[in-house]
Amino acid sequence: MSEHYYTQAPSSQHDVREVEAVLRGKVYRFRTDAGVFSRQGVDKGTALLIKSLQCRQGEVVLDLGCGYGPIGAVAADLVGPTGRVYLTDVNQRAVELARENLRLNGITNATVLGGEAETVWPAEPLDWVLCNPPIRAGKAVVYNLMDEAYRHLKPGGGLMVVIRTKQGAASLEKHLEALFGACETAARGSGYRVFLCRKHLHS
Image (tube, rainbow, N blue to C red; front, top):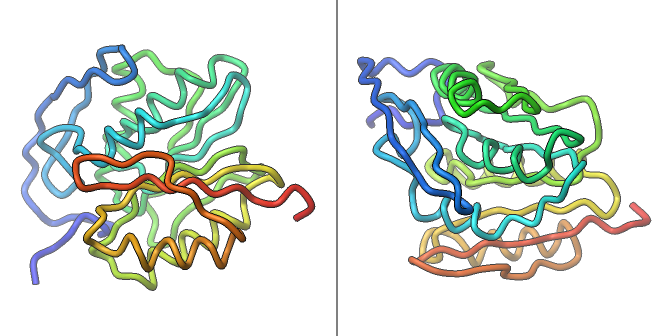
């Protein structure tokens, strides 16, 4: 079986390139490489999630499974200088690229974590967790990430996750409904759905 991007240390030969994307009306530049997700450019699912983001000034956000960092980069601009964004991934190559891409886009209110075998989580409670999950890693991995996201959210905090409609959306929706008590579809398009869940205020 070929190596996939949910790999701590990709063995594929480097093939660094630079791509541009217009996200929320701003042009971003991203360096990508072999062994990371969607290396040719921002994929349709990620673009739909970014279009749907509800982050506000001053909030604390985690881009979970950040890849080379497009979701976290946009979130950092949305939360502004009074907010904080964390990006995390188990893929060492993705973590290095995400750090480079924050610098490339002049983003200073974001921190990249990870590159370790287990997901690294910020120490502080989060207003938002944003995720384009590693579906190819399997349901057990994805559902565990969702459970951990719930645990790290502030009461009233939100999870936004994008998934291909025909690649496990129905079962993920059921898992999120059981976890959060409710799960709504915040957006859909290009064969994807964006789920939005809120942690109960009394949690």
